Image (cartoon, rainbow, N blue to C red; front, top):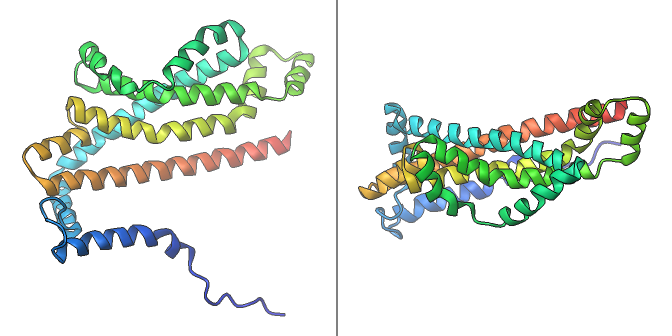
Length: 262
């Protein structure tokens, strides 16, 4: 028998992009029909034309690069420190006694409160923003790493030790691979925060970047330029999350294959 016809089935790509297209169309029409003041909400077409001009001059690309650099530098620093601290707290009770109170107090605290201190210490350049991103992203990474390493099957660790495997190799060959999915979950939670915090800190302390670009435009009442910043941030965020998602799926696929081979 032939396969049943798939009549009436909506293509997946259409469902996926229907809501963004509807929002963008409503944006454009609301301005064109005079429902919204163009100064408060410029037409999408006007914003895109202004974006093309800003890209041609290289101005917005320079600020986008600054934002991406700061976000990624802070995120990578948080990853290195967070995974290290998470492993130590899971495998050493003295480290756990030391770091647990700090994580318990620091995780729920609004990190932006430290921005004034970081500006005082590091100035308004890259350093204060990178440190702010690192501080924001590190806590979910520590928590996820600790949880992942704590949930590793004790039988696997015990078996590896009984076979004469050193503690160092137990960590690298047993504990970290087994806890990898949980660590990636922590990174996935922290990753969007890196871009958000970077833009916010740029708005607060200037020093370039997309946040500073938007604030400067707002001061001169350049509404189209402000919305160019919003659009570029959305595009950059979507692109970074897409890349991260592909990398995460690739690593998890490799992890599943390696676990099946054991």
